[in-house]
Image (cartoon, rainbow, N blue to C red; front, side):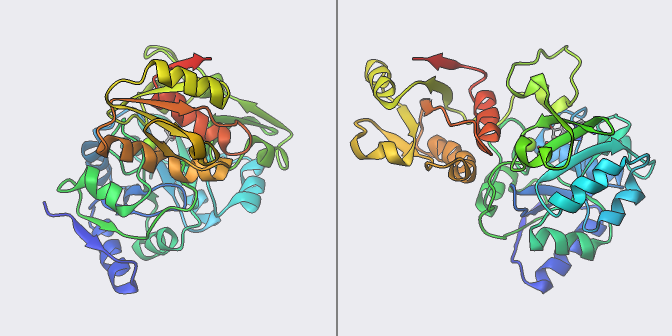
Length: 337
Ligand code: AMP
Ligand code: MG
């Protein structure tokens, strides 16, 4: 099939919403990354998402809504803390997992009895959900395992000919995916995937905030995990990514000893001045790292990089989310200098 490129005009959004209502898959911009949207209540449409991405069928999809009350249509036994967090952080980059209602098919929930729900803040995503009149399941719009897309061109690169349309909403402002949480009890939030909403942010509402151990450590394929996404290879460009932990001088010394053909470094903007080897940079602050990490990993592939040495980001704020993506992109290859 030809993949149609749509603009963010109201006329094109109506067209995209018609496609969504008809069970088609459409690439849509959100503030985090681009998503592959489909009607979350339509098992056939949802299966098309898994096919287009090559995503394992047991890895559940996040369901996107445009009004808090719509959560009541797709989930049950929702604890009060869900609504307290929604009031503070929605619309925004927070996904909350609660028991699902039957209207959400097992295709969407990856066979689980729960559903992850998010209300995105991006005006185009919001408008598309409103116009289509259904909850929209939308995983990141990349080929499974590859870095997430933060522009419509990234989506086209991965999905050309595999989905009906892509709505071009420019570059995503956040750049990494939403924070995914579940509730251990009425006061306890467990973070399953770090994102733009930080543990410190969550602490302003929840009494206890726990980081699941799968966030920073490797999970075996046969291990029981709180979130299926933890066990899969993720965010990896074709190039072999290795994280170097240490200061700039030790980084330069290490790269000088390993500087073969096809070696690139992914460094901080403030490192650039005197850096003697081939590099790309990904900003200095945690927010800049988040905005740039996926597009820089994709760009390294277009440069035919074979090995990429990455400066380890600071773990403050959204830096924890950036590091969580990088350790998976590197298949947990972290070199302490
Ligand atoms: P993506 O769709 O690429 O943004 O990834 C969504 C992430 O949320 C994956 O890591 C999923 O495993 C996780 N997730 C979505 N729904 C659930 C759920 N019901 N239970 C546990 N994890 C979930
Ligand atoms: Mg993803």
